[in-house]
Length: 118
Image (tube, rainbow, N blue to C red):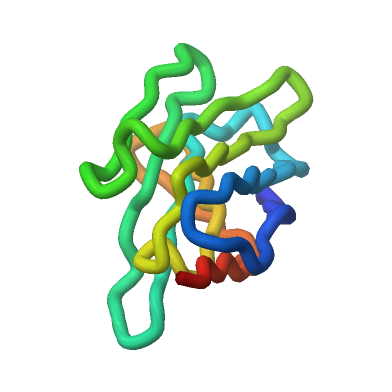
């Protein structure tokens, strides 16, 4: 089992920056990748950014490329640095972890609200 705890959400203005953190605990060695998803009111949950934990390879949604950056440290924490925030970035942001193997398991954090005012 893997537990994920997010932090760092809040209310900011257009153009501001914000950093989200996701601390993983439990079966850390089983994690292959971690990522950030978001869900705005009335919309489906969408992937924002992901990182392969061992190699550090990253991937981003087109809507955030050049503005968001995902990274991880050696203490099992993944970050999402968000810059040049826009009102359309407003959503609940969820941390996600995927385990290794063909029968991968997916874990989710509780979510953290990010609100960008215009």
